[in-house]
Image (cartoon, rainbow, N blue to C red):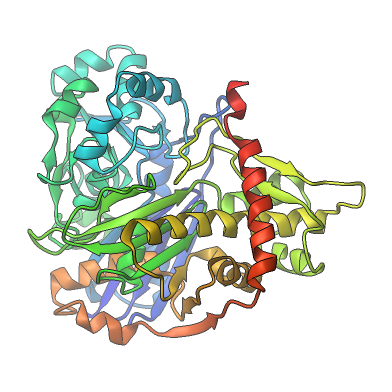
Amino acid sequence: MSVLLALDQGTTSSRALVFDRTGRILGLAQKEFQQHFPQPGWVEHDAEEIWTSQLQVAHEAIQRAEVNVSDIAAIGITNQRETTVVWDRKTGEPISPAIVWQDRRTSERCDRLRNEGFEQTVAEKTGLTLDPYFCATKVEWILNQVPDAKSRAGNGDLLFGTIDSWLIWKLTKGEVHATDVTNASRTLLWNLKENCWDEELLQKFEIPPSMMPEVKPSSSHFGLTAKSFFGESLIIGGVAGDQQAALFGQSCNRPGLAKNTYGTGCFALMHIGSEVVQSEARLLTTAACVQGPESNYALEGSVFSGGAAVQWLRDGLGIIKTASEVESLAASIEDTGGVYLVPAFTGLGAPHWDSYARGTIVGMTRGTTKAHIARATLEGIAFQVADVLDSMKRDTGESLQELRVDGGASNNDLLMQMQADFLGTPVVRSNVTEATALGAAFLAGLTCGIWSSTDEFDAIYSVERVFEPSVDPERLGERKQKWSQALQRSQGWDTQ
């Protein structure tokens, strides 16, 4: 058994990849699923559609890889984090749509808790901040809004899980209700220092402990798939939230190494070692992937709208037909013509944490064209990421030697050059842009013995291209100042 199957369940699509022991992709399949926006600020998924699409692409990837199921040593799972599913323990049916990480419906609840002075408790226990982004207020909302949900939960009839838990439950036909430490650390219910579900937080959000999954190291035996799905039982050997999986897949497994993933959102993580660091810049402290009882941590900054901003150009404005067209359109002009776009469609993440911010375009004139807007969109993504990484450098007191990048939009050369310019730091793109899925495969491979240690991953990691900074610092300072002004105009908008 020499290949690994990675299930990469993302925000807009379910994907599956088959890797060999050198990290080479043998087969890949992807299927988009429907996004639901029932009210402004609300984002939902159908958990059953996620499951069926994920199983479908798993079979397609195996077929395209031209391998037998018996060749698969283990399955690794990586997932969109914070998206919340509550389902019936007996029937396995979700009791409501899954509430997606982008959803802002619990903003007012977070405000009330903040006004009560509860944010400091949350930060000290979880390393996170009070925000609708995380799971706790989502679970609380479901239990309060779905008829009889609270009583059913109290009777032990309901289960909570992030998407990884949901897939594990489905793959094992209800035999295993589990998650890993990276996903647990994103719920606002996990005590980061004590490595347990926090009793005080569960009580505060009125979530019965019986709903919570068992938490395991990221690289461990999570159970066996039911034989009926693949013809034989397969080991689920690795689980990690998508951003921690990408950190692992980029071989950033030592303190000081950092990566950014350009997906629906942008997520920058810096490995900080075995000690919890409280951020002064309102970044998150989160669990990094682990193999055993030891703990590893990372600083994280989340940009809510990355690739989603390009999708908006395609689906909302219709100025491009495919996402890949944005690069040529933006490159058709030398600058934005003074246009700045803040893609705060669902609020701003780190380091601002403003759930009431909204997307803003400033600086337009009659001479503004779709090319200016396209270029300003890419700059808006790169500026947001630079803000996050500059905050990390201040928190750790460390300079950033390089930024390792992955995700679909990392293939956009213009965006990567903008990123290097705005950071003043080389941006390194590896030959494997599928770092998230590769991280899940690495974790599973460690469990089943394909690899013996993380040292072997350094040999697999290889550089495809390095983007060096090329902009005059003085000119860049003026642009950053204008960006800050545009950012200020977007903040607090939804409360006016």
